[in-house]
Length: 187
Image: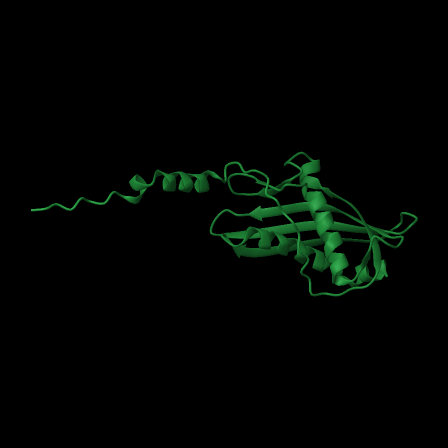
C-alpha cells in the first residue's frame, strides 16, 4: 500500500507568506513617509483673483504631532512626505486654478489655519475631519473675509487611502468656494 504524503500547511511551505502577513499587520506601528500628490477634481467653477499665502497646521505648531503627520486614532502614525500645511496650501492653489480662479495674481491674499486634520480609523470604517479657518486680506492687510470650514466624511476602512485623502481636502476647499462671501471677497 502506497502512502500519499500529507501536504504541509501553507505557512510551512512558504515562510515568506508569514513574513509578508506580519509586515502588513505590524506596518501600522511605524510607517515611512507616504509620497502624496493632490489631483484637482472639483466640478465647480469660480472667478476672481487671489494670491495663496501660507497655511499653519496647528496640531504641529502646538507640538502635538509632527508637521508631516495626520492625526489618527489607530495604532501607528500617518506620515506624509511633505508637511501637511504645505500639502494643503498647494492643493488649494491647484484646485482654485483648476476651477477658474486666477491664482497668483491680484492684490488679495488667502491664508489659513488648519485646526484639525483627523483620521478616526478605529473600528471597521474611517471618519475624516478637516477643519480650516480661511482668511482673505486686501492689499492694506485688512481682513475682508474670514470663515471656518469644517468638513466630515465617512469612508470604508480599506478604501483607497490616496483617493480618500484627496476627497477630504477637495470637500473642504469646495465648502470655501461655495461660500458667497468668499466669492465676493476675491472678485
